[in-house]
Amino acid sequence: MTKVETNKFKTILETKQAELAQVLRNREAIAIEKSADALDEVQHAAERELAIRNLDRESGLLRQVRNALHRIDEGGYGVCLHCEEEINPKRLQAVPWAQYCITCQELADRRKHNEESEEIFDDMPLANVA
Image (tube, rainbow, N blue to C red; front, side, top):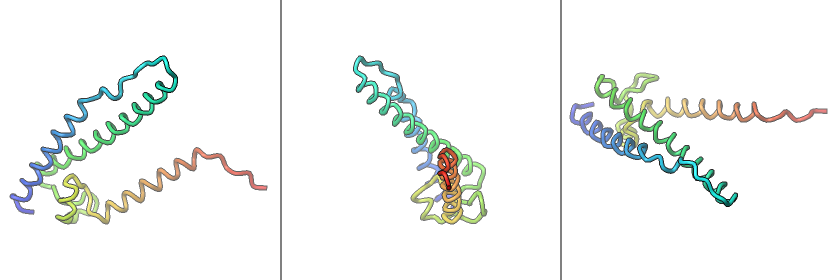
């Protein structure tokens, strides 16, 4: 990857970092609101839960962006953290904070999905087998 390309991605990542930092500063949506109406309480709780999930997702993305900026500073940007092959430039265009090539990302996603599925089944009671 050329210096010009790396600088272009650095600018994109710095812009995204500033945007995410601004979003994460606004935490009014997670404030607990009391209401006399039980239905309003339920509605506020659901909205708060959604806001918390969004904050969690955005903070995770901010970590990925910061990690990508760190990899640029260290000279490892654009290289898959798993197989150490170069990440396709088209992938970096779409996801500048990508840590893995598409093949390794698919493996990581599959592994994560399988772990989540196992957790779901761990909580389910076994059916009675007669």
